[in-house]
Image (cartoon, rainbow, N blue to C red; front, side, top):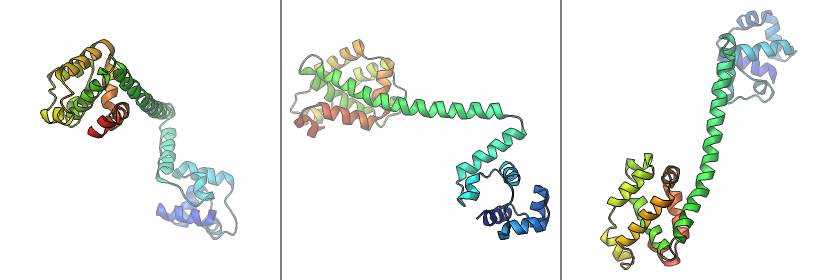
Length: 224
């Protein structure tokens, strides 16, 4: 296995056995013997190969190495050659922190959307359900617009004030929705919403709409 992978590596880098031997401080015959499986290169030679060509032990032990693994190996070599190890560590740490933050933030948002929907549905008794329905159509209204991508509390309320419930939606809901429901939603937003809440509602629109549908009654759920 090691001999086969060594031969493949040499050909990948367009090296002759003599050229590879020179890089490793051995003769052409030694490289030939390694590739033929007569004997195996010592650990010190394998370490030199790892450092010089960016391959990992996996390459020799399992006969494969994915692109990311190879690139990370090459980046490490470059960082060591340029004495930039600390810079590389900072970049990788930043990547890890950002990834975990986004992952955690996504989980928190999913719970927060549900909390917001419940808060609205429970507001002022039965009015909460109609407020949720207005919110659903308001979100749907903004879904195709760029405004929702950078929305905060003020922008949310400003746009909501200008939003008019379409006549066809009022008809579909048997005229149970009115401008009063929108005013109640605006009042709720002014007293309870913050910038993060507003952004959360639009961070994952399909998920928000799904939460709202779960909070309304059976009939309204099928009308939405």
